[in-house]
Length: 356
Image (tube, rainbow, N blue to C red):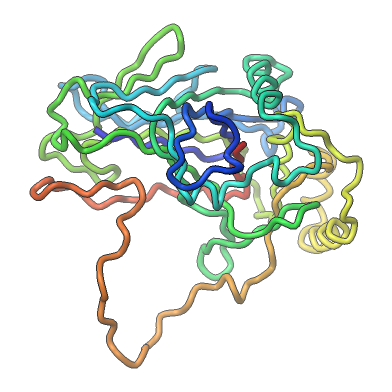
């Protein structure tokens, strides 16, 4: 059985084995903790309060039928463990896409705390009404990777480059991260010992694959449990090209704010353009969230970011070989079957994730 765990919205990832600064694709980083973040001063403010939700696709019993459970509440602390697999259990391995497209906060900031200080500060905030940490999700094993990107719907919804205020960092950044667990050693879902345990310290919930045997479904691959964690604000009436909410990741982790940005040319140009774009949204956001931490904003490279149009190339394309297998999908043995993957609806927000 396989499990796909999806994270969207304001989330900070830390690892048992330390910082990802020197990690490479394939490095085992040990147990993963996902901290869901929201500024406690924004409670009741729909455009700035992040509300954590969980949706699941699975079966409540091995003999049961698949059930979709959207918009579930999340316990303050949740541990996700895959049971019934005999292969040696490693920690969580980081894929290269995670390292490439999920920004490391300490690389963006001018005065980072130590990682033990960050983890201790996050842990002490859990469950506090004055804390930034609303939920803690612990995942012992798997592979973590980036999937969807921050995008802008100007000529089709295409991935778009972002820059980070008061830094020289720029490029493409993810707004969706996936953790893959398990394998297809039981492709028909016949082994009742293979299941996911969701444990909050007091209770356990068990989930088996959403389909089994010859069943297929339009929303999920065979032999799969899917969990979707979202931590988003309410949607605005107008899209904006900046994401001040990322400052809450820095605040939660104990990074100090600046009273004013050191790169005044960068900030003054941004603020001037933001007000030209919409005279109400930026002043309202600045009053609510303040400034002084790095935050992402779109780079205006529309010609570079526009995807090539379909055209007559003048000759037929002869395929030279098979493409790389999609991330998170294992090669099946002959006769293993399987259905095509269907992507999840994309939540198009500039609300990136972070890592340490």
